[in-house]
Length: 295
Image 1: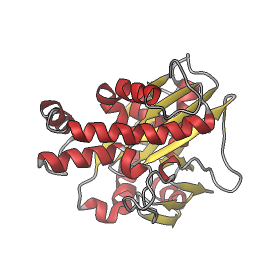
Image 2: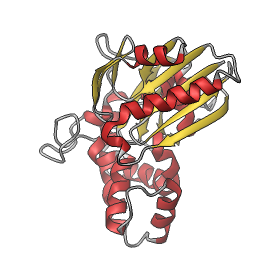
Image 3: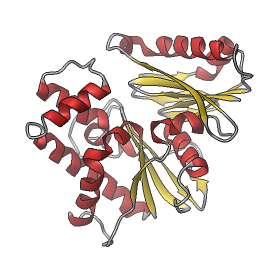
């Protein structure tokens, strides 16, 4: 039995995963605004507590960690949305849990899980995007996860969409994730509706549903920015499928079909298409947990 952990910018999820990719138990912690000021000790303590409790129930063989950012030999070289660099999370969690630990980029974990355990109608050439606190990605080609030699790459969220635009955590301005992440959309809605930034996901979606006319301008702008960023990726990779995971999956009812129409009808695509296959990750927001356990 393995434990998979998906560390995000807004919450951490821990799951017990069997050899067939099924999550037997899952636990989640949402961060408070105060906890985000010094996040990693909070995350490490939570993971350690949950994992050590699970060890009393299951025979755990391995702990897999999915983390946003650039990873090398278990060290998080850079994760701008967690605010860390050169962070040896592997060594820390091996010490606190007593387990063998592996660490991999979260979007790559999710893509691997989708390919191995997701819907069986995916083709062997698909683009995977995670839209959450930031934007991550991966590309599966002929059944293999493509990556760079020195770094994994596919930092789709940090391609510049609008030069001189909003300052990004990475230090550049106008990055895709400052316009296309689901966090970006949620924050604009919270501000316009006068809500607390501590509001739960279900309560926020309920507030959005009740105030659609009032926030329609936010929805329209978000869709156009999201389509612009994704169209650039389609023009580069020409994928058979586009799979979207992360927190965006909980807003698919609002965006998925309009996004598809915007991409097909806006003139953004270099090669015209009659149709475009875009799906929400079949494993939902749990893909990162499952993928973290795949060696």
